[in-house]
Length: 196
Image (cartoon, rainbow, N blue to C red; front, side, top):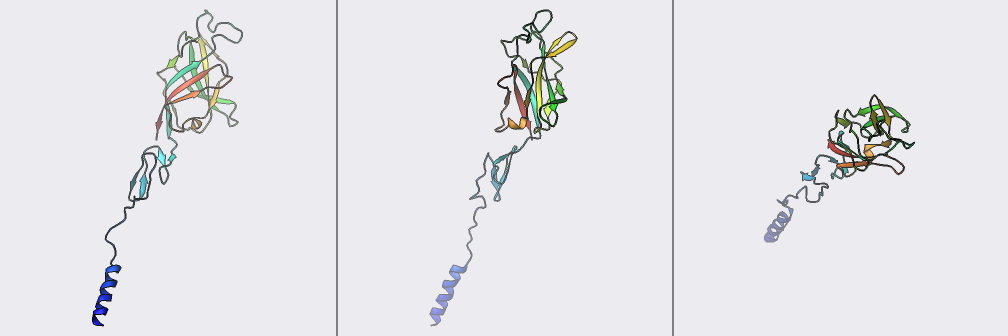
């Protein structure tokens, strides 16, 4: 009986000793978008958030580094040349903020201080030097981009502008954003950088 009692204590003792192996806290944690697991939690790379890094963060700002003009009309609506001397237009882009209705321009947000002389309609003129710097710190508000012709002391808008909201274009973090519309006579391609 004494042996049975000792054997029972030994048996109970063996199975009641806590396991010395610890489970890895990251074993069942799968982090997305190159996130890494630390102590059971995902550490997300810049630009992502969420408990598994599954959501893209909105950038704090978007900087435009280049504006390419994809298309513009070769003549005015009446068929006359843009410039009085019969040469090609001297073009420059302007960006406006929009009124709360989202349909009416409000005020100039950015005005290019450079313009391209005698721009050819069969090419794609590129404003690769953006002066002054063009940065959007509010990316969820509508803006409109227009193209103007500068002729001596006057300037004239080339067709209607294109309204855009950068938030609609940044899923997947593209480095180029195209601003076009079906009935527009102008079109643009923006090169962008994101700041988080």
